[in-house]
Image 1 (cartoon, rainbow over the protein chains, first blue to last red):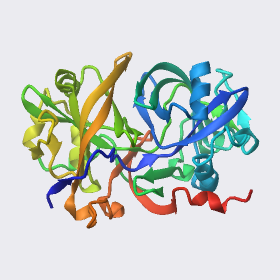
Image 2 (image 1 turned 180 degrees about the horizontal axis):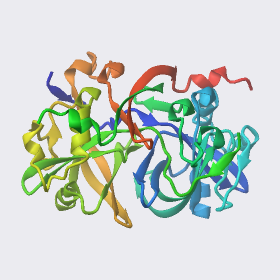
Image 3 (image 1 turned 120 degrees about the horizontal axis):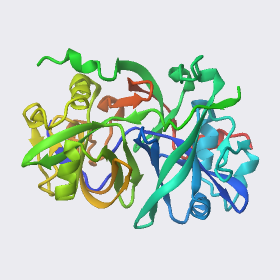
Amino acid sequence: MPKRPIGSVPYVYPVPIVLVGALVDGRPNYATVGDCAIAGIRPAVVVVSLGETHHTTRGIVEHGTFSVNVPRTADLALVDYFGQVSGREIDKSELVRSAFGELETAPMILTCPVSLECLVVNECSVEHRRIFIGSVVQAHVDEAFLDEDGRVARLGELDPILYALDNRYYRIGPAIGVGYEEADKLCR
Amino acid sequence: MPKRPIGSVPYVYPVPIVLVGALVDGRPNYATVGDCAIAGIRPAVVVVSLGETHHTTRGIVEHGTFSVNVPRTADLALVDYFGQVSGREIDKSELVRSAFGELETAPMILTCPVSLECLVVNECSVEHRRIFIGSVVQAHVDEAFLDEDGRVARLGELDPILYALDNRYYRIGPAIGVGYEEADKLCR
C-alpha cells in the first residue's frame, strides 16, 4: 500500500535497551536508555543520547566517561523501573552491584552480561538532548558467553531487551541469515 | 560468572538494520547501516554513522539531508547486497523504486514500510567515521500498518531486520512487556 506522512516521529525500530552508567556525586547511577547505537567498529565508537537535565548526564559531563550495560530480559522489571525514576529521588547504586574498570569513573553493572567502558570523545546538543560520542576503552563480557578464544559465542543466550515506539519491550527472535552471505541468494 | 575484558569492541546488540538514502550525483543511493539510533522523540532526532569515504556520505554532506528506511526480512538479500557494494560500482537507484518528500534531496525507498526524511542539524567525526545528527522532518509509513488515527498499529507485522556482532541477522521476537508498567512487578 502507499505510504502516508505521519509527522515528525523518529520511527527506527526496534532499538536495543541499555543502561547508561555514570558517577554522580561519588555514587554510581544508571539510566535506562533506548537511544544508543554503535557508531563504528574500528575504531570502536558508540553514541548515547540523554536529556540534559537527567541525573546521569551530570556525571557524564563532569567526568567525561560513561558505561553502556546490556541487560537481559530477566532484568526487565528493574530496567523499566530505572527508566521511570531519577537518581535524584533514589540511590540506584543500592539496587545493583557495581564495578569499575580502567576509567575509574564509569561504573558498570556486575550482573549485566556485557558492559562497555566509554570515554567521551565528542558531543553535541539538539535542543534539550545531549548526544555523547564515546570511544569504547574496554568491553567486559560474562565468561559464560565467551568461547576459548575470548569471542562472544552464545549470543542467543545473552537474551537482550528490545524496545519499540509502540511502548512495548520485545525479545530477540531467531537468526535468519549470515552477513555478507545473504546477497548470494539475490537473483541478479 | 565474572566478566572478562575482551578489548575495544562496541558490543551493543542487537541493532536495527536500516538503509540510509542520499542523493549522489543526481541519483538516489542507499547504504545498509547498523549504526543508527533514535536520539530523541520530542524533538524527533536520529543519529547515523557512516565511513567518510562512503558514496552515500558524499550526498549527505552535499545536500545536508538523508533518509532512514526500515526494510523487512523479506528484503534481506537485497539489504545484504547493498551493504557489500558501493554506489560507485553500481547504480542502486535501478534496483529499488525511490520517492521524494518535502526535502527533495532525501530519496526514500518506496517498498520499505517506514521511511524518515531527515535534515542534518549537527555532525561530528571520530577518525574516519562521520556521525550525522538528523532532525526527522517527516515520517512516512505504509498505510497497511496504520490504524484509523494514523498511528502505527501492527508492529509485529512490520518484520524488521536486526543485526549483531556475531555477523548474523535476526528477526524480532515476541513482545514481553509494556513500557512503564513492568516496574510494578518489582519486589521493593
